[in-house]
Length: 74
Image (cartoon, rainbow, N blue to C red; front, side, top):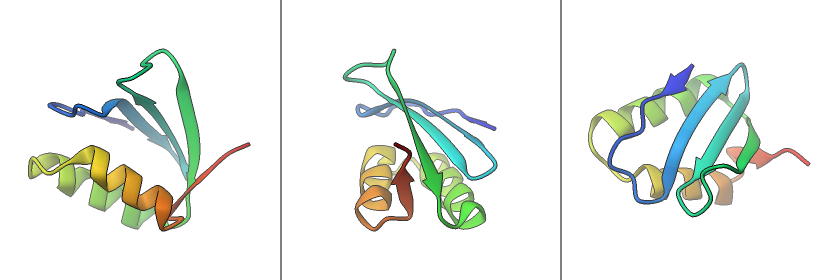
């Protein structure tokens, strides 16, 4: 699933396949980072709501990483 991220100054693009979330930041949109969503349904639902409500997608992603709801693949 590709998330249609609009108006974000931090997130260039985001997509999700299963529990794998791929994010490209606006600072370097060609480099993609892949994370594992611990609770994929909750993450997907929250991401869609944050984006649809015009809230900060960048803050949401940063908070998800800090809280370990998103864990970076190494």
